[in-house]
Image (cartoon, rainbow, N blue to C red):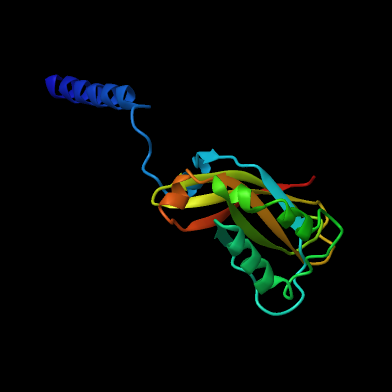
Amino acid sequence: MKKHTAIWLAILLLLCAAASSCGLSADEPSEKVGVARLVTTEYPVQISRTPHVTGSYAPEISVIQTREELIRYVSVYEKCYDFLDETEEMFYDVVSMYKEDYFTAKALVICVIHSPNATMRYKSEGIGRNGDEYNLRIRVSAPTSSAGEETDWHLFLEVPDSSPFLRDSAVITARYVEERGY
């Protein structure tokens, strides 16, 4: 009888210890938990539809810190994408907003999204640190029907020069969060 009481007492103590530690420390990060718990900083964003025409694809993420880098980006990819597409805000209209004085205190993070369907919509939810890397979190709104042509989108995130991923020269990866049936 004393053995059973001692065992029950030990179990009760273990349960109390486990219950008292709940909420005091975060779960170990895992890929799934890390993305779900990603704390992001939102930045103003511009978006332009830019169907791919021919040639090279632009990198998924590009960090542009000077007007010269932006001009170089446009000159490299202007034959590869339809920057004159007027379905949404035109690419050249967006790019022309970023003059030399813009880059004195800010930078651009350009994300190129290859969309399997032109009716899909994308919204930036910001950039956050996830362990040792930075993630650009993008919410994808998919229609209930998926008929449509493929297209590409350029997202321009306006970030301050003080952003940690700029100082660290960190790699930024895109993480997509799907939302169905709009």
